[in-house]
Amino acid sequence: MTTPHDTPKPSNFLRGIIERDLETGTWSQRRFAGTPGDGAHHAAGPLDPAKIRTRFPPEPNGYLHVGHAKSICLNFGLARDYGGVCHLRFDDTNPEKEEQEYVDAIIEAVHWLGFDWQAHGVDHLYYASNYFGFMVRAAEALIGAGLAYVDEQSADEMRANRGDFTTPGTDSPFRDRTPAENLERFREMQSGRMPDGAAVLRAKIDMASPNINLRDPALYRIKHATHHNTGDTWCVYPMYAYAHPIEDALENITHSICTLEFEDQRPWYDWLLDKLADLGLLQRPAPRQHEFGRLNLTYVITSKRKLKALVDEGIVDGWDDPRMPTLFGMRRRGYTPESIRAMADGTGASKTNIWLEYSVLEGCLRDDLEGKAPRAMAVIDPLPLKLTNWADVFGAGHIEACHAPAHPQRPELGQRSFGLGPALWIERDDFAEVPAKGFFRLFPGNKVRLKYGLVVECTGCEKDAAGNVTAVLATVVPDTRSGTPGADAVKVKGTITWIGQHDAVPATIQLYDRLFTEPQPDAGGRDFREALNPHSKRVVQGYVEPALAGVPADQRYQFERHGYFVTDRKLHRPDAPVFNRITTLKDSWGK
Ligand code: ATP
Ligand code: MG
Image (cartoon, rainbow, N blue to C red; front, side):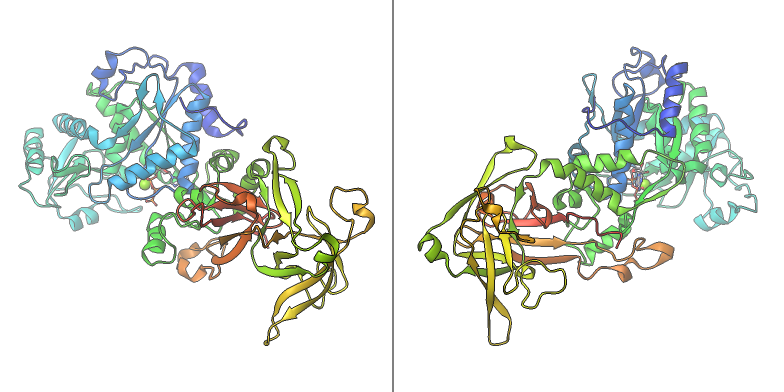
């Protein structure tokens, strides 16, 4: 079973379909032998303990992205909610593009999102390539029944004879071969003696069908290629549209959920499984395909080809660059699995492709981190603050011990401690020599509170020869320690964060922003490179408070006033900290 989590889900049409199926017992008599297999295999097994079966079927030819997360949450979530099981299946029928590296990465990413595929003592992790033997057997059964033939037209002839939306197709001259002749030619295709492209095996349906997918779709093509799982066993490989329904059927999938572009394939999906059940190869009732709308996020591209271009052209630093919408990129950026699941669940499932505002995803992230992330002070653009009367007030060398809750609503997380001394780091933009209207922080003559510390009054600044401010000068206002009687006697309009120079921890801080400046970077066929944000990454040297010395990677914090940050899982070292900005505290996407 998948792990239980999260809040109640909004309704969607897939839930309606599943609930009706459960009510009418559509799937209740199906048997499941514990492993994938043909009709006879399952018939010998017990009733399927899973009320429904769904699957997430990635092709292992790239890294998973936020769009896949939608599909993962939908498929695993529906199975979890309805007493079912969701399989992880590698749709690895295409030998050329698939690699073990992607298989491993996909497993890791789905686990990270919070799902697994163990149920009823079985590990439901499958590879479509393990079904190649059955797929050939099914193809030969179709040939035997006169439902498939080997076509030796050239690719150009085949394309021309397929017709188009307004013109019916033309029958291939090879269409009337006998089953015996077709079987002989299909075996020849498998023998390795025919070159790539010399022949294809096609279903014999209807070249005049208004649905082009039913105009004798291809089942098998010749491809002399080594496969990551089956090696050189095969030189014929099944077409996706032939393989996918069979994969579903062998695994006893009940609800085969896919995106809208497969809607026109559904008659072919049904035709194929119906014929294979007629031929006694597959159990009934057959799985059913249901299509839902893709999830697109504004300011994000999810095409694998375009994401690959970002990596290959060095626009980002690899697939797990914190700006990438891959699950590995988002993980490194500091996104939590909970926030991604909340976003996916919150969007339900509909019959149209949707564009979700990126700010919705960030909202889910802030909601999750607000209650979880310990607070800390950080100075991102440091400027020294010198408290010139420190020795007079406290005595030279004195350090005031300061404390603050790790989280304002979670006392169980304890206290953080840091020291206030005569030399501090503050944010450069917390000082203005000449304040703009409404600026309440440091300017000559103004008083501000150093958060968790005391009130100081700005007296001026130091500059270098070029006129740049190199330090701010201020004096301590005595008896204003936060939390002491009389601390509020001196009223101030501004409070600033700071870090003592004596206990500051130097840190590299990677400030990330949106990768694209346009909400739909590749809309209307535009080159997404034209919409790149030149300021999507800025790396600065700052300081964090001493409580953060030596922390491990992958820890999330709220830096007060700045936003949420995470120790980078790749670059961070306890003795050389690297923080990524996950997001700012407030939404800036709408502006
Ligand atoms: P591409 O077409 O970019 O190569 P793909 O999305 O087709 O990628 P698959 O590995 O085949 O890649 O996808 C696995 C599953 O994820 C499919 O069922 C697919 O429909 C689903 N999926 C992919 N992108 C989205 C999305 N944006 N929204 C919802 N589901 C998606
Ligand atoms: Mg695909």
